[in-house]
Length: 340
Image 1 (cartoon, rainbow, N blue to C red):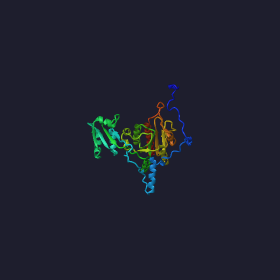
Image 2: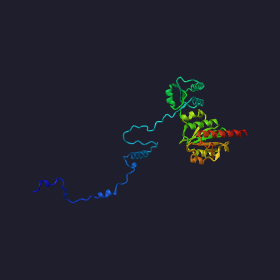
Image 3: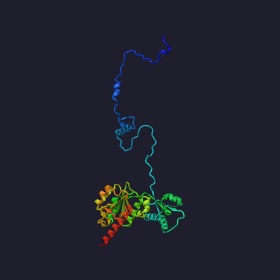
Image 4: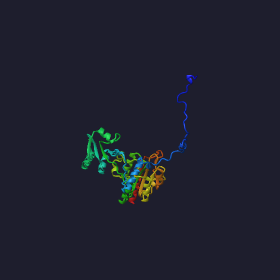
């Protein structure tokens, strides 16, 4: 007699199938062989790329002309959305009475003139109002806190600010050809790796003061003509064109092909500024950053690397000051040559 505890569990015993046994049919071998390569997206009829391919084939078979647009696919229409980023307002604020007055005198395109309420009038403010009124420029009177916000809290606006559209840079070669066509001896300054807008403004001011005709800035890793540069230039940016070079090294080579001598400024230069023999020739002065100096490629393409003699206790000169000293020396040498 079997004990109740030894009763076999239901379902634990595998029942043998009746009839002949059938093999796996090779399913195991197929699994070991792996799957075939995945078809390309355009070869899959239900993939969007496959639908576009089929639509293109139908369109071409019908003798249609391609317009460059994506063919319509089957299915419900989906709402389209413009994914392109919206362009931000890239206008600049020119602040300060001298800068605003020079910008209006140069007739650069302006958008709005902002004036602080109860501003103290002087001759510059009177002329600013006269020029803005004659040109039909909108004039808005705002409270000083609002003008501080518009001009930037670190800006000394002196009660006036001018909103101008983004600066339109000249092309370096076109600028050079324009100078030559006027019968002038080219004298330009190029910036190599300078990122401080105050240096750019000071260089523009020096170029205008010492008879230069323009400034060249690289498109990358360099400062552009910002409001701070406008301010530092004291209005000289309105009279001195600034060109933008897509590649500074290639621009230097193009200038050399047109007979312009390229002088790089560096503390370890092999030519001393007072002994410069090329001052009377067409000249492009290249100024490097105060920290890294001139880049290697720019240095290799300079006709001469010029150094400014300074006291041994001073490590280096500011980029704007170095450019000013060099421009003054070249203008002095050119003036002496004319007297002979």
